[in-house]
Image (cartoon, rainbow, N blue to C red; front, side):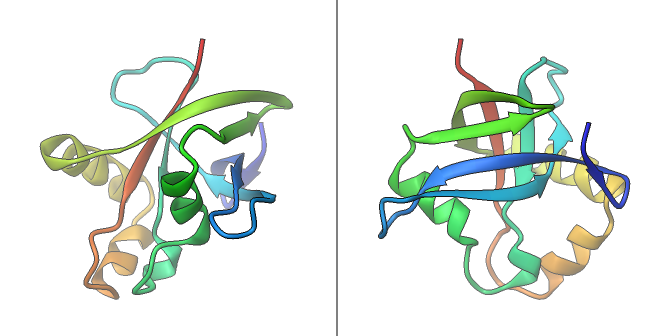
Length: 121
């Protein structure tokens, strides 16, 4: 399993909102509270930037064209942004595991999205 700074990595593959071309970005991921296999949480922090990262915009524009590659296995996924209490609980788990995300949130006025990626059967 690929890791960076002790964190699990996946490759997120999206189709560009403007270009229509495939883009791949490595992202750290976290387990979902459900404990289900083939479910990953990713954080659209963009280092605390005032705008969302391109991959997040791409998913919003092309939600049916999102894949992950983890451990040399590629899967088509559905992507859902967490809301309300579910997002808050996930946020608390994530900042406990990776405190740098709390600093990113303090740098921006936007609520940093947490996205659940679930492999399609």
